[in-house]
Length: 132
Image (cartoon, rainbow, N blue to C red; front, side, top):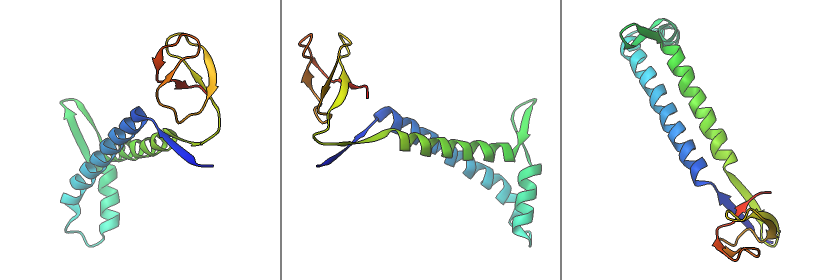
């Protein structure tokens, strides 16, 4: 039997957006700390110390440490990886799945590789939504 991969466009878009946000935040945090640690002999200790002590001001009166920015970037990267992993599903050709009509909301079993089908109940040409 043949395997078919179905991907969710919205899941991939959300995963890519979270990935870009995470990477840009981490690069910004490293760049801010790198400017001050470039001349130190013990690079890692100075880098880690400045990551915990350096503060950034977004708006007047609102400031936070760079480690929080770094943690936000790592969290965005982790969530992007999870979103990308869970937005895909493998189907086996010949396997019947439960689909639902978006108009009449009735369900039936059919082959998952069919993109456009006629609903057996309301006879509309639809993209069935996979329920199971």
